[in-house]
Image 1 (cartoon, one colour):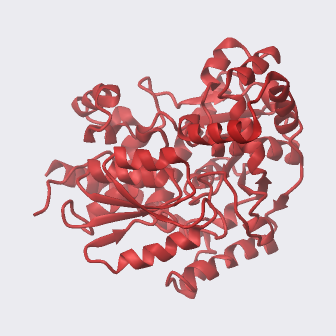
Image 2 (cartoon, one colour):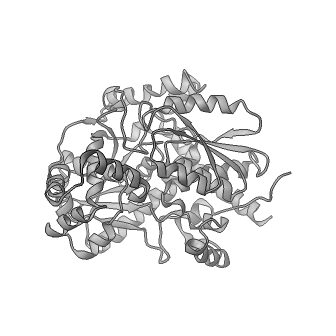
Image 3 (cartoon, one colour):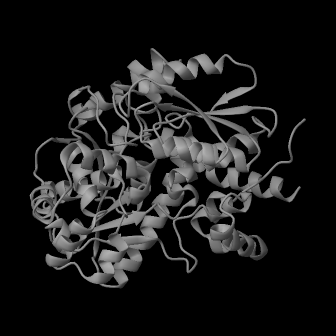
Amino acid sequence: MSSPLIWGPTFEEMLHPEKIPADIRGKALAVAEKDPLSPLNLFNITWKDTQGRVRHVVLPREITGIDAEICVIVGSKFPTGSHKVGATYSCTIEKQVSGAIRPGRQRLVWPSTGNYGIGGAYVGARMGYESLVILPEGMSRERFEMIRSYGGSYVTTPGSESNVKEIYDKTHELAREPDTVIVNQFAEFGNYRFHYYVTGNSVLELFEDLKAGGVGSRFAAFVSAMGSAGTIAAGDRAKEAHCNCRIVGLEPVQCPTLYANGFGSHDIQGIGDKHVTWIHNTDNMDAIICIDEWDCKKGMQIFCEEEGLDVLAEYGVDKDHLECLRGLFGISGICNVLGAIKAAKHYGFGRGDILFTVATDSASRYTSVLKDMNREQGRMDKAEASRRLVSIFHHQGRDFIGEGIPHVRDCWANLKYFTWVEQQGKSVEELRSQRSAEYWQRERLLIPGIDREIMEQRRL
C-alpha cells in the first residue's frame, strides 16, 4: 500500500523562500527548532535565514593572512546541519515528480561518504520512503548515529573517505533487490541542478550585497572540494554571470586523483576521491589544488577549542567574529578555506577581490575525531594553536596546484571513462557529448519544467 505523497519546495522556492505560500512558510519556520523531524522542514531547505539573507561569514585577514576577501557560505543551518540535504531532496523530488518512485513502494539507497547519506535518511523518511545508506566503516561515529536518528538504516563498506569503489560494488549488489532504487549523488543531475541554481544564485545575490556594502568589487573565484561535484556546480552559475571568475576544485594531497592520477587514503571526510563524478563539468574548472588532510584536521581544532579561540583573539579577531566562528567548520570546511587561500596566492588576488567557498557542515559532526586527535597527539595548547594559525593558514603555500589548460582538461574528462563506462554502464557516446557546453545547458534548462510539475502535483 502506497503512502500519501509528501511534497516540498521548488528550486525557485529554495532560492527564494519568501515565494513559498505564506501559510506553509509560517508553519515551516515554526517547526524548524520545535520539531526538526517534521516533513514541513523540507520547506526550510535554503541558504537564507528568516530575513532572506544568505548565511555567510567573511573571514578576517587575521585568519587568512591575505588581502583578498574569503566569504564562506554556511551549510550548518540547513535541516540535518549540512547543505547536502538540498541535493538529496532535489534528487528525490525529481524522481517523485516523474513517477519513478512513490512512498511505500520503493526503498531508496543512498551511496555516500557521509553528509549526502545523512540527508538521504532525513529526506527519505520525511517523504515516506525507506532509506538505506551505504557508508564506509571508517567515517566518524556521529554520521552513523545521525542516520539512525533520522529513521534511516545503513550498511558499511571497507575503508574510509577514499574507498568509493567499494561503495559502488555494494550499490550493484543492492540494485538487484526488488523495489530498490539507487539515488546516486555522483550521477544524479538533481544534485547538479540544486547547486547550479540554488547555491549558485544564492552566491551571486550575496556578492551583490557584499559589493554594495563595500566588502569587495570583483567576483574572483568559487572554490570547493569536489566530493560528488554537486557544490562546485555553483561555479558554473557564477561564471555565467562573471566570465572571468575562476572555478577551483580541491582534493587531498594524500589522494591527488585529478592532480596526478594519484591514489591513496585520506580523512577529509566528505570530499571523495579516486574517481571523477559523472556530474562534474570538468571543462569549466580552471584549476585543481591539493590540501593536506592534517592541515584540515588541525586547522579545524583551532575553531573548536578555547586555546585556539584565545589565540585568534590575541591575533586581533574581534569578539563577534569569534562567536560566529566557534565550531563553524568541519574538516571539509577548513579544506575549502585553505584552498581559497592558496587560490588567492596563486592567482595574485588582492584587495577588492572576493573568493567564495563553503562550510558544508560544522564541527559537531567530528567530536569523535577531535577526541581521537587529543588522545593520540595530546591536547593543543596556546603555543601549538598559534603555530598552527601561522603555519597552516598564514603560510599556506603555492604547491600542488594544477592549471586547467586544454590538455589537462582532456585528462580530467577522460578519467570518467574508467568509472562510468567500464564499471557503471555509461556509453562512450554520452561521455564524449559531455565535452560540449550544450550538454550542461540542457540539464540546466530542465529546472523550470521540474518546478512546474512540482507545483501542479503539489496542488492535487
